[in-house]
Amino acid sequence: MTFQADPALVEQVILPAVRDLGGFDVRRALPSVQRRMVGPFAFFDAFGPAVFRSGEGVDTRPHPHIGLATLTYLIEGELDHRDSEGYFQTIRPGEVNLMTAGRGIVHSERSGQGFRDREARMFGFQTWLALPLELEEADPGFKHVEAGALPSLAEDGVHLKLLAGSLAGVTSPTPIFSETLYADLQLGAGKRFKLASDHIERAAYVVSGEVEVEGQDGRFIKDQLIVFKPGSEIVLRAASDTRVMLMGSEPLEGERHIYWNFVSSRLERIEQAADDWRSGRFPMVAGDPEFIPLPATAPRAA
Image (cartoon, rainbow, N blue to C red; front, side):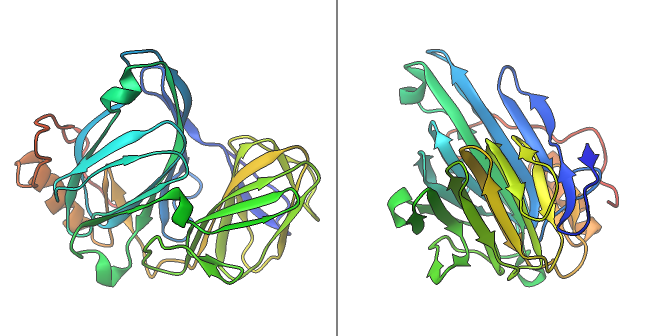
């Protein structure tokens, strides 16, 4: 669902679609009917906050990807990543997992036994970044970045953690594939933050609180994705204690097709990946024989 805003500074305001995964809500702001991508950000999912009772947890069975990188960031909880390249990593709050699919990878995301042994909370974000044309068929890989390795910028009432890209003279160690900004910004009530127009496509997802865009009427609230007009200089002002995820990048060089977990500039490549998964030609995750089957719907131009 999209609300049309004054085009002076804000291009779109998007409400995410909500899916209930058995008491565990996922809110998907991208892609939407009105807008498919912001720069390379092809998917933007917020999952939780959710409370799991003892014995419960997340069980995302093995599934494939091509043509993208997944970036996972947690605010609460923990999650075990396993993939067909042999990587295993538990991600915890404030950390980043970046998995590069390239020509193809299979992974699972499950709660570990320690998480299941107690009542626990889960809250975080996963984004999919479409790869540049020359890297769509790159070798798959994985990178984990500890919370302490991510640069932070802090002053009175303003705290920013740089998850990927560069800002204000600092650069995140998270490997990225284009000029991309991704950050976790927290503002105390009444505090301001200037988002420069360095990137053509920019957006902010309101995690909590209420935020204003100076020069724009109204306030933006929890779970709204605010897409800013290219070239505009944005000043965010927190109407209350507020947290937002900032993203920005240049437009991709050409169209991307998205089907299920596959992203590619070529529809025939997605059709091949779908057939490979259906026929069992992808490598699998060692020790995890389960898998998510291919959807019944066929790939199509989109």
